[in-house]
Amino acid sequence: MLTVENVNLHYGAAQALRGVSIKADMGKITCVLGRNGVGKSSLLRAVTGQHPVSAGTISFQGETLNGLAPYHRAKHGIGYVPQGREIFPLLTVQENLQSGYAPLERKDKFIPDDIFALFPVLKSMLGRRGGDLSGGQQQQLAIGRAMVTRPKILVLDEPTEGIQPSIIKDIGRAIRYLRDSTGMAILLVEQYLDFCRELADHVYIMDRGEIVHEGAAETLDTAEARRHLTV
Image (tube, rainbow, N blue to C red; front, side, top):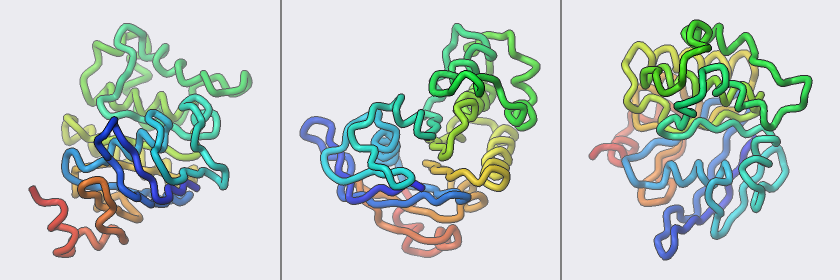
């Protein structure tokens, strides 16, 4: 589904990604782990078109994405849940969800029932402003908004950050359900090791802008993997 090959990314003179290569397959959860500041979010910005790459290729379903604007990538089926959620605080929950209509054809401009089945709290709060929701509820709203776009791959940047444990479990169930029921690819950036161990089919670990470990989720318990994750 998604292939990142030898990607470099710079912010001015500073290099954030160095020859990064990963794959995210259909029907699989791919998790990218690493400490703060190692380039995980930069990788997702490259995938979603938020920041141009300096070198390398990003392709999705065999089509090169290099140079495509973020809204074109959304039309290609890339759904993005950014770090910090970035919901619209003055819009209602319903309006936030409807903002996901932008890349859709007219016939698809409705909110799928699956969203309310996964996150029933959203249905009971459709008229409330997004900024009045708790952090966990906002995270559910951000995932729901991405689901409205009917993504073929869902890209999530640290969805457990600052979220209470009960909501983390709900988010984990939702991610697993989306993988199993729709067969979509899921690319998940995370620091919460247990969350990735429970969900991931394949893991990558980043350090200093590079991929330093790759393997099945079980490899997270190896000494090599832990060496790159401990502070």
